[in-house]
Length: 87
Image 1 (tube, rainbow, N blue to C red):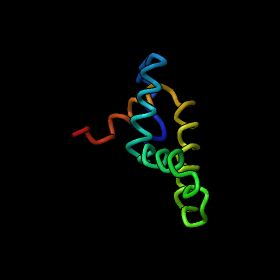
Image 2: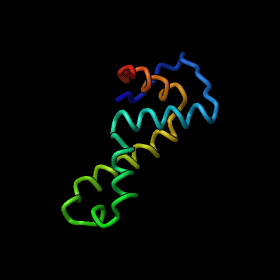
Image 3: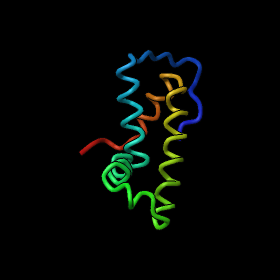
Image 4: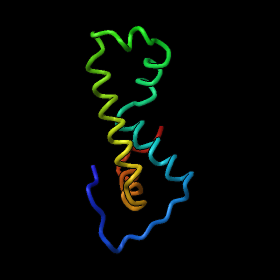
């Protein structure tokens, strides 16, 4: 995970590009869509004690998403560059 960027890097993302970048990073790091499908489609399963670990991972993902939302554009671009290419 990228923690900081050199000061010389200057990148400006549009609001839409930031949203897409954060979504791509989150999906690559946490498979967020899978958690959201379980949460939205199977509320009883999501609330069960057996899925406590999944809820914990999801909570950590939400904290990371908030961190990324506050991150500078250059950090988002660096994080995207670290991701494997889509197939």
